[in-house]
Image 1 (spheres, rainbow, N blue to C red):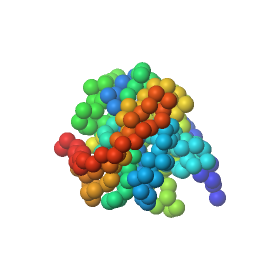
Image 2 (spheres, rainbow, N blue to C red; image 1 turned 45 degrees about the vertical axis):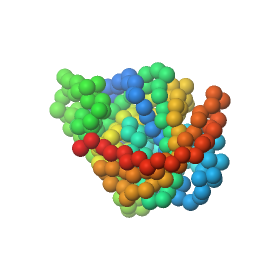
Image 3 (cartoon, rainbow, N blue to C red; image 1 turned 30 degrees about the horizontal axis):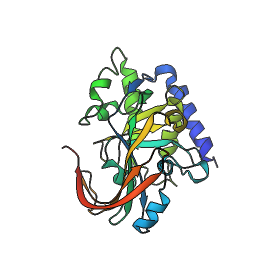
Image 4 (spheres, one colour; image 1 turned 90 degrees about the vertical axis):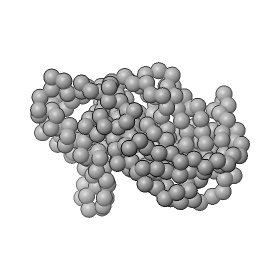
Length: 261
């Protein structure tokens, strides 16, 4: 029986042999206003969460020994996932009512470049997204290249379903490996928000000096989650000190984050 690594290698080689150089590897340099990342806690008090998240580094991607398999990476091969919209975070993390959720926001000290994109059609529909930047992604490209992109996009916007019977993550990880040979990251539509926002997966060691933490907050998930809105109660705001340490102070305000329809 093939290992996960062998399966990923198989799919990577399959796409290379089937489509060769017909991939659209066009990349971009992008500077976003804010990018968001989160950690959820099913159990535990506010004080316990505050003690767990003492530094901004605690919100970075996990070390190899704690890195699980996700859409773009194998177990033990950490990549950094960030989202374009704050309300993507509880949906991406499959949060439930009463979970505590820490969200950190980053601003860029420089452009993220080069960034590849997957899922052009869906990305073009996202409000306040990157449509103006990527509108000429397929200019002067053949129909074959466009069809290849559509096939790849379907893989990245498909739910994982039954990982034991057929794990689509093996295919998306193989494709990620291909694109990250020429880029430091990939922008792709968010499945969790029904393509109303996008995610970016990045090589962590290449962007550590670019992504600067500016805000960090602990929330309690209040409302049942939908792809239209997320209800969060703000419990604690963190002051980020120059050495990366966090000084927490308690707060209490209910906020509803909504997507534009």
